[in-house]
Image (cartoon, rainbow, N blue to C red; front, side, top):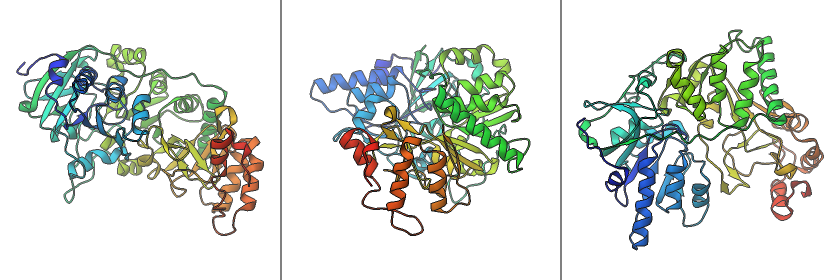
Length: 494
């Protein structure tokens, strides 16, 4: 090997205060672990000496605690984008004087870096399972923005992780679109098509360090479906089955995109177990445990994603059975996995989770009570605005019923009523297609709002100024105010 093999601590010394660092991976899958942890320790030591040390951070999406958590606790982050899900980082970006955070559609980050809209990454830290002297890198379980940060960075640090087998070669589709004005269509016309090459190619001279590791991905487990998430999954399955019966979805079905988390897993379980839905494909961001289970059962025939965000036993099962999975999975950069043009071309059924919805179909995916950032927008906007059918799901209440997930007006808007076609809770389905605002409001109140909140919603609607979209500007956030003042939205007054 022509590269400098060194410890994580030695590699961390190559990163300076003020550097802008790009990290591989998408969710904890494929994210580096050793060097970020060593970098956090270095920051703490320098801070103890009264010396400054902070970096800017670009990632594919969230990472593991060894990256976001360690660097946040070390107060080593000057700015961060895009999506995150770490508790300590969340506390930092919600605290005045903490890390500066700006949310972005995940499909746009790589191209906006190339356009020069944000500071250029000076360092890229890439997790790989193999690298050769020609600079061909085989990535691990996640891709994210790896191609773009590797091409733009002045220095590249490789974490060569033996936990991931070299037999992953061939599972990736590495491709960067041309930038305007010479951009052509991405040559992907079906879910299994490939546009690029199986390896990430870099200038070997830019690789300043190789750090050998053997670390598991820090993907957490998923809660088993409960009564609420199971019912949501059944309603999604019921809605899509009815669309097939009506001829609005082809009998061969369409590719599915599903978001991250327990609701998404429950939805996939119900789709996979519905005998009226034929075996189908996935074109999505994260490939979760439920997808792999359905693939083994023959219910999912192919899955395209940006990462294998699966629990460690499931990841090991994939690695132990590569002959089976190799021709059923492909991992792409998020610029492809979330590409709006491909979403529209392939005709995706998109299923994402709302933090909050209002009675007109606007969706808040990011901010609790309108101010506190939870995780971020992620790729939900990439998929929602370009879907064949866009579905949002949410349990109707939170905090043991003290919060209604459906309110008169969302406290922060990420997806407008123009993009949201269907809203589903454990109480039912609101098909919003071709409906006026007042029709949407009545559908959502009747079918999706928790019964204990329906009288309150009716009271609000009756108090609203009449017009195309009835609104009471003095009370539209009354439920939020009631919760902040009394701890229960039921105490709102209209």
